[in-house]
Length: 217
Image (cartoon, rainbow, N blue to C red; front, top):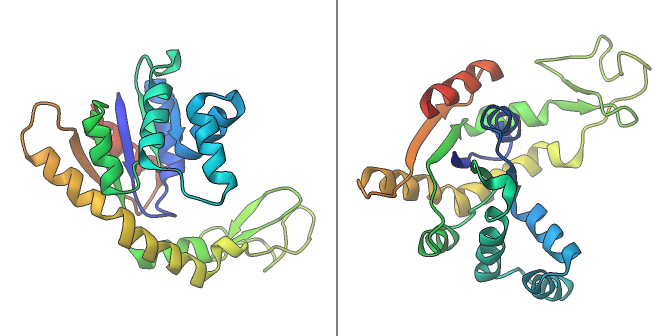
């Protein structure tokens, strides 16, 4: 099972990725993890990527694709893999096809922007323990206070409404085009084209999981 998971930040990809990994016994692969591992291992591509990152540059797509090919050749990918946050752009998606990296399914978790803003901007965190709350969906017993210690809850900078809106704008501008790219590819009838699955990401996480599993079965 070789999968790409698409969706806006806050759509719930991380939660669903964990369910998918467990069911199909496949690793979750992110470009960040790959880059760190290659740099740490001192591979030729890792060293090249490190030089670019140390200079404050963006790692080129050809290096990223090279790292992807190396990573999916490892033993833990024998039954497949789940790409998380990759590809991010059309050139990366096209480079993967050109490199012969076959994908079985592209799964899009679709959540309206307004629901994502409400979901993320309402989060509150108890820093010391990592316990999380939501002002609407999972409020603490006392407003703004941790249930266990009574200490103050904070809103992380990443969860502030303006930050969430900016991240969504970047997603719509850069990554959402992949939705139509893979949708068209799936409809093309090409032999190696991945199947495209779109699920409603609003609601109970188990229901969303079951929608995904039903589509993948």
